[in-house]
Image 1 (cartoon, rainbow, N blue to C red):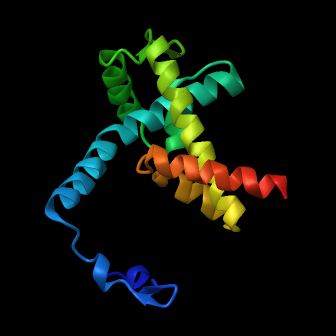
Image 2: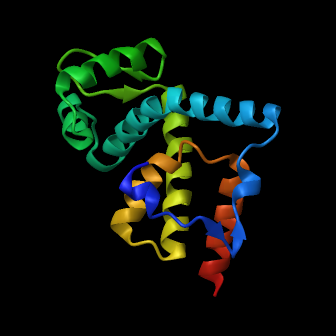
Image 3: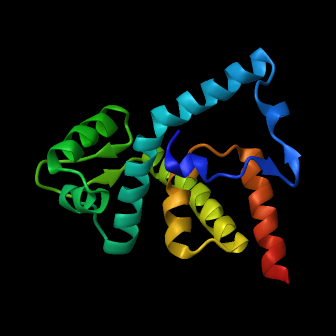
Length: 161
């Protein structure tokens, strides 16, 4: 167990978490399947979302900009661009900007919306901006639509006050 894990509270609202240890097998399988599926798509979604953001805010998305913003090498970005191209999410030409296909644009919009809901929810809870941005980056891929709806409702309630 890491030092970070040891600092986590072991109770919620004064009740023990021991009853949550092992859900029924079918439910447990669905939990792990959901996480595995999210892991498969999260990097793709991150790239597509960033490409969309760069196009929106800078007018273009270049491999060098993606590499610097993601903290990876241009070779890593080139490999992912090839994969995104094969998946029909981007189009590219050597030494040119990247462009999202219609499918890529839809993915970028959905990913951005999910990210924004999680980010605004964390901020509404009082999480500082720096931490909220880091946490939202991972959480957006693993949160169900049901949970996102509830998060959005909470945000809306907070802004009406």
